[in-house]
Image (cartoon, helix red, strand yellow):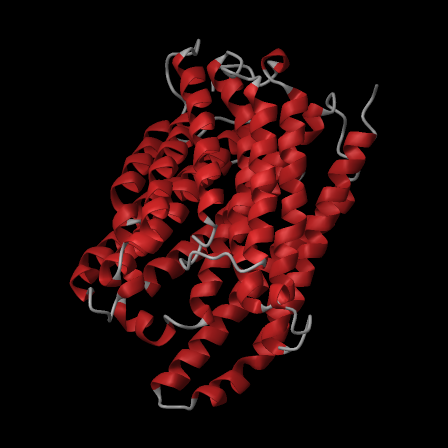
Length: 450
């Protein structure tokens, strides 16, 4: 990165702080909703029989809220910090930032209310009512235009790799949301299933994944005060991600009437090891000789933990695309383990790392209020996610092999109930860790020098 990271005159600190504050608010809310609905698995009468507190209403709120509320809001706020520093110019159309902030967050709040009232379009991770999808797309189009115009006016001609991934995330997601606009009620049968598989994979692989890579490639070198191991390797990861990820979504439909697409999906899922390898090789290469310094840096700890969980989660994800493992585990919590390990354990964790790096600098370089409290938050979040993923994987394997052996469904449910209680306990652990981190950041902001 050739542009100084100390160019504070290029950023709008108030705007960034507001985006990050909203993201932290959603981060407190939506994982907590997930903990409540996991409690309902073990104790179905929990929260009573009120329709808007039932499992079918709350789970879409948790999933969509984690993606669009917690992760995406933090990511957009961090984009307003990263892009000026990598381009040497202020964000184009910066005055739109506050309006977009209001539109984005009011739309999320409206989506939560409508989902609770039962407005659901029927696609997993695509349950948002149509009006909320339209508003999300319009907001992302404006954000994409802002970033494209800023990068077009840059002073530094070479594009640092974070900008590649950042732009890819926005452009690809604008196209993916068109799939969501068209798909649920305009396609039927096998076409609908295939379209849904494509959308889900694109949402994870072409929005959350490149956005997370952009954060890692910016904040890791900054946190450990060293150069990125290989810019060329990172670009290889960018193009391999763009090439292989869209075709992997059909692995959700193995052993179905569209089985003929399965071979392509399996090959694509295995080939995804290429972009994963480039990220992990860059991570470990950058960290050579810098582990001691990282141990004293809270953002670096989150980046390290997220990278290690990414390694485990991606190996798990590639393996579960293979028929021999997908057959017993496809409809079990083994798949949920992979989702939590990557989305929450990796990308949300990287977004938290970026927020921890940026927030004190927005408060006139005030030191973090309490490194000890922040470290407690780190260990609660990290251990909570790791144990949850391990328990869900073990639970899914046990249930899958019981069903394969011919066990009755209710027998498998009784066998895995103890795992569900541990899952709920780890959920509360994660919530407590997030709460400590948010409290630390709020105290940091309040204690900043005048």
